[in-house]
Structures are given as C-alpha cells and as structure tokens.
Image 1 (tube, rainbow, N blue to C red):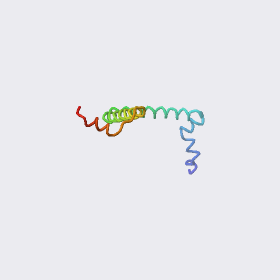
Image 2: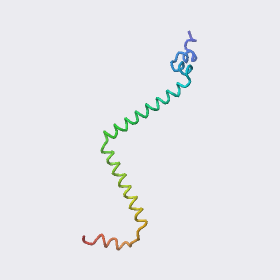
Image 3: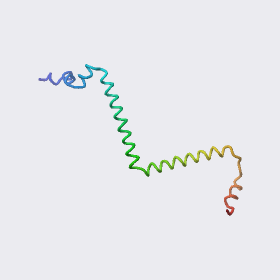
Image 4: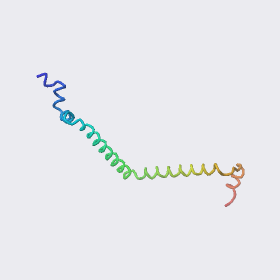
Length: 96
C-alpha cells in the first residue's frame, strides 16, 4: 500500500508526465502557449486601465509634452546669445 504513494508512482500517474514522456517537444509548446496567453492578458489589462483611468493617461500625456517642451527650450537656449539679468527684468517689468 505504501508503494502506491511513491514519487515515481505519482509521476507516472500525472498526465503531463505521460505527455512529456511521449512527446518531449510538448513542454516547449506549452511554454509558448502560456507566453501567448500572458501577452494577451497583459494587453487586455492595459486596455482596461486606459479605458478606466482616462484622467491618469491625460495627466501623463500632459507631463510628457511639458517635459519635451522644456528639453526643446533648453536646447534652443544653448545656441542663442546670452543676456544679463537686468535686461530680462527690464523686459518683464515693462508695460505691454
């Protein structure tokens, strides 16, 4: 009776053991199938997140655009001439 619960006996009872014993390539097929399923589930989760959290996506998009604008302004300023502080404040304080 004790031999019925031996690990080798359990492995022989397992469906996966039989599949892999008969077709070793079945292991890779199962992994690929699982990866495809995980990809599909991940895509569905992202779509749901985007649909349910539109405000979050909008805020993220605005932040990215602001950062890009700042990067462009910094790059543009690197090739322009410099001015002193007094000139800047004179322009800012003058009536429009």
